[in-house]
Length: 110
Image (cartoon, rainbow, N blue to C red; front, side):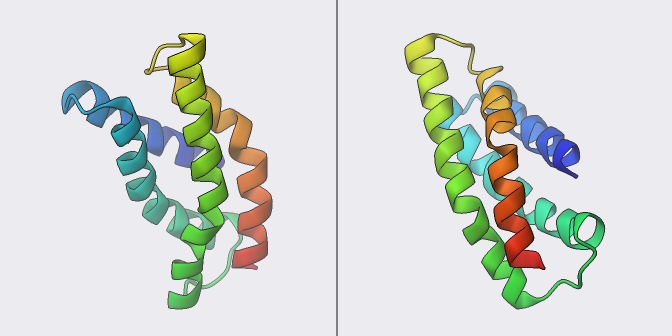
């Protein structure tokens, strides 16, 4: 599901960045929030094979807080300081944060 979640996020990010012409940082946050809802259901049904509940639905975003903050920091560093394209930078940030997110999410959904 990680790959599916990543593709989902990236498509949303590119939509907001390129088609809606929204700043890369805002595009990142909006894409993250939308993809988080989709990610919850994909993780519940396919990755961890548990039943969805309101409790886990509202706890799930908390598992993503660390991930969102670290990704945002990587994104800013890559774009502002290293000079990586804002089109490519979020992909690199995601790859670096996936292991952290997996461990935290497993604890909340199981």
